[in-house]
Length: 455
Image (cartoon, rainbow, N blue to C red):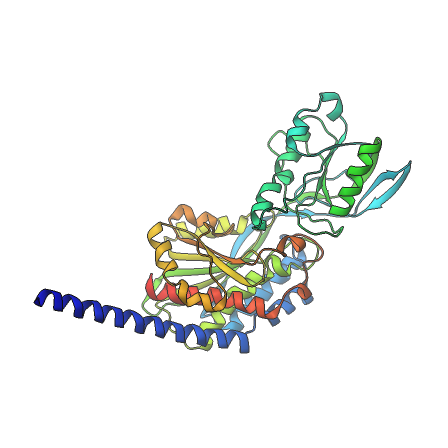
């Protein structure tokens, strides 16, 4: 009987303590929410980044300006220390480019296009050749050699609209930026056109990174918008279609750039690091607002919020603005190499690189014991519309840290509109909602707060 009584008292005390801790956490998370929604600086930070610097492909003068901006923004946010971490990045320049196609009769019609990143163009000359249209890689493999040799291959593969998670659709279609180019080059095609990897119903082309396999000819590769792709596919069904392509894109070696890092030093365990980050570079079109200006300013907002509320974290909180995610991941690899070389202990890393839309979940790439710990905090996130803790997701830039055993996490915003804008000229400041952006910053701040307290 005494044992049962003691057990009852122990359980009661545990439940009371747990309930009190949960209430205390809820109060603090609400304070963070009020701070960010009422006084947050991330939206203004994004305006300055996008409107005074604009797009910022790594290796460009604009990327240099973005590094200086990031250093200033982290200092203004209250980071105890801010520094630059050297990164050598590729210098890819798009240059002048155009595409004309015989959509109706012999007349050539100019259509919107974008060369794929890291590819080489025509060297300023005009490439004129017949187009061969295929719906997918399987159909391409069935073409005889004479149908491929010397031709321009158009891969008319459509982004799957039936997949509710658009990142699944992206994973399915993005191989046409990588695999298709090399497959066609190996079979002596002259150039490749792909349907843009995007969900949009307009004619804005989407760029993105590509890469030639070793020993593969460096043929031009470009993307066209969905409306032009529909018109081209229809024309190819009626007749032999020819195209004229001129492009000057080319790689011009490498250049020194930097990751930008700001840190709040931990009060109890300063050698243990919690990382939040986004990538500072963008493609050379649009303004890189969602991809990934949003992630950068949200990471900065985590620092600002902790400082503004006078929170004294146990561990060091580090915000990293990575360079060269889009066409090389040099920043992410340099950061992981440095962490290993200096024997730094990262206990958690979180990335925001899926747009500044309303947060719906938090991806978890870590052992099950840690996943379950974070999932136990779900009730604290539900009032803010964040419910999905089931996806295994980290991030491209923090991915190299996985080899060091670091638990990874990725912010999961609502994905339905992201690939309407992704890697296109429509990714601009005006496409970002200040409330959605701030809610994402809150989600990151809340997870950092809880991780620092309970991990």
